[in-house]
Length: 498
Ligand code: ZN
Image 1 (tube, rainbow, N blue to C red):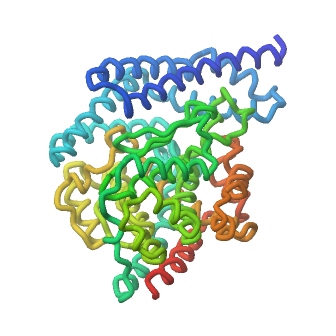
Image 2: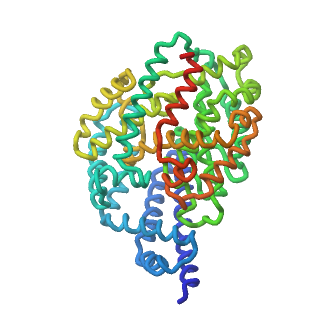
Image 3: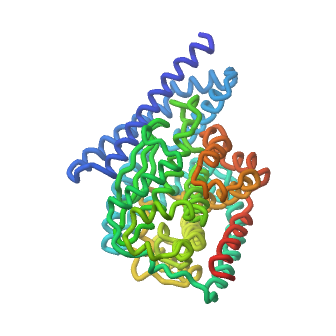
């Protein structure tokens, strides 16, 4: 058979894979937004069944055949990268014995519901035996996959290929030192914002109306997407023509919904603007969790928490907001939404303390996977680190070690992506502002130029480029935490008059 025909068969197999993936994601979206409570159990089984089918294709002999035949014969760049991606998935998945994979998937589902219960009751002991097993599986898998320096690198690779503990252990302490010293200065400032001006009853439908308008202005395409309500906000791409956003409304505090929607909108724009040539290949998605986060954080922080944004959007905001905002001057409002205050919950943290939350999780999970600490000691160690890094101690494990869902799904190596994404976004911002007057276009409320820049430099590639390749190609330097520090110094020096 000639290469052309083989490629055609291979594309059919890719399409089959993409169809399973889409069905799984649609089921996930449904389970987080619309499903009646009694439907959850059977739907979980359906997801399990479909995941197994997908896993079978990824590790099939047929897949291996296509990889072997096409690897060196194809001329097409997209096909080459697709084969690379499929080969990596094949190799990694084949290293895990089938039986163990099945047991692990069942453990994941079970652990998530146990974690929920443990969190609601602030009872870590319920979750502990499950977490112990999840850690054991991850250690086992990491050994199957292999690593050079640190066993944790094998897990990190799943979320941020190319980044290692060596890099993180270099940039995180540097970042922590700068952030802590900035925080000390802020604590000593006598010019503090007053966040109490932001509270008051803000009906859900009004928050929604404002959020929808902002998403539209960002360039989020509602004909290829939709906005729904959920407990934990997320964005999900079924394919580039169906990218959905969810948000959460708190009628006492609009910040969750407004900044959350802008954040998820940033994720969604990435997926909506991936090159259409990549459709139905495993390359048609964001290249890593970190680069994804760089896009959401860019919009949330560099746009949504920017003074220029509120200069152009405050009138619109007030037209949806409770009456008392009419008496809140723009400057007070801007400073209030940028208040720095150590808090227990990661997803509610301000721009400055956020990376410290991530470092705590990184250090703990790295130590867990390396066998340096035990699961049962996590709550105590968590509180100790919170106290060291942020100067506060959670009142219970609900606001402490149990707050995030990631470990319950077996996701170890994921958290660093959040801080990496933040550093990436600051580095991209530094380059972008040399080419574009960002404040000027934000003041005009016209985001086309910004979105086009991000599409040209990041979005379009999907997984055609690796995370660090994107950063180095665009910014012409390696990962550099200084850009984030400089940005925060400049911003908070003005807000707190340091
Ligand atoms: Zn995000």
